Amino acid sequence: MASGMTTFFPLLVVLVYLILSLTSIKELNLESISMEQKEILIGPLARFINPEQETVPAEKYERLFYVNAVDSIIMLVGIATGIMASMIYLLLFIKWTNQDITDPVKELLANIKNTRGGETGNYTIVRTNDEIGELAEGYNEMTRKMHEYLENISRMNRELEQKVKERTREVVLQKEEIEAQKEEIEAQLDLTTMQRDTISRQKDLILDSIHYAERIQSALLPPTTFLSDILKDHFIFFKPRDIVSGDYYWTTLRGERLMVAVADCTGHGVPGAFLSMLGITYMNEIVNRNESIRANQVLDELRDFVISSLHQTGSRHEARDGIEIALCIIHTKSLVMEYAGANRPVYLIREGAGKVEDSAEPDCELIQIRGDRMPIGIYEQEVIPFTSQEIPLKKDDSLYLFSDGYVDQLGGPDRKTFRSKYLRELLLEIRDQPMEVQKKILIQRLEKWQGEVEQIDDILVMGIRI
Image 1 (spheres, rainbow, N blue to C red):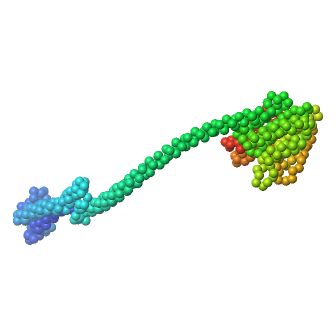
Image 2 (image 1 turned 90 degrees about the horizontal axis):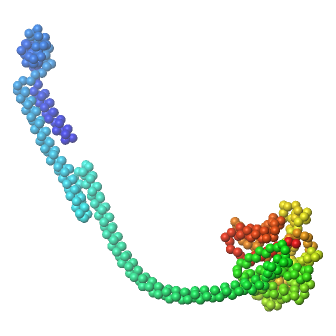
Image 3 (image 1 turned 120 degrees about the vertical axis):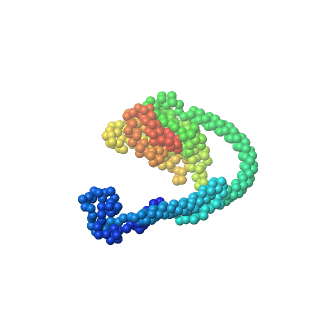
């Protein structure tokens, strides 16, 4: 705007004076214009406009204007006046600019320097509504918020210092408590270390005793050389859950009578091992007294021995310890088998039977021979004699005696038991294999089924091929 005023205002003044200095030829009231007058009005160009005419009618030039000497002076004065007015206005504009722009900016810069020096309470006076005024308002708003932020920070610092002091006092108290607890813990640690060493020594003594019990139990079981002599094609898969086992196998040969048994005592580990050694000892004693005894009579006498040794009376709060057993007496010449069982069955797989049972093969069957549903030990119901079954055997028949550890083992994707059904299917699947190969397959299948699940019971499976 200022540049427009300084440019157009002098031109306007000059234009006004120019209009005032012009005089119309019509105002001269001339009837004609001579050549000399035409040169005065037009200038040297008059010689080239109708030079042959000495005079020209005045009405032809009445639209023209001329400037006389006085008017020229007036026009020059007007131009000078316009220039002077422009200069005065320009000086005034510069002064106003310094007052409205430069001074506020200088004041703002001074306040900014003071703020940078740490003085946060300086504000700038807003004098205009233009950009400078907006800048001043923005600075004032920034200064106000900065002042508030600094006040908040100061307040937070004071609160933080107070909290640090309080926390320091708490830490000092806690340190004292921790030091006291440390001393107590060190005393307890010394006591715990002494107890640990004592427990470790006791554990070693107990393990030594259990390992010695294992040697005793192994000595009571039939030796492998004896089994190899009387059982040509057989296997024994024996896997105690602990060092000693509550399961046991028993074999003896008395004349033409081959006696084989697999038993599962109540519990496992040391308690089961005590009961298993008791069962082995009593069975040897029973057979030694009467070598022609029948299978069911062996179980009857064994039950009497167990009830008497454990002082079982049948009271409600009494432990129901006992033995589950499958006993087979095979007459080697007649190939007739006496079987008596206490809650344990025997599986017989016979080739060429012509009838299929639990198998897709057409030339074999699995016969499940069940025993009596009562244990060797005290029983809730009335004690009755065990029964004996006679089963004719054939060459290449396979007998399988087992405790419940194999079929009750948890595993598989759903952590379920292996179940007797799958054991029967597996035995039918591997029946053609030699007995030692069958043992390896049973071990591999159980390990695959068990996976990372721990063993839950003693495992015993015996296989015999006639």
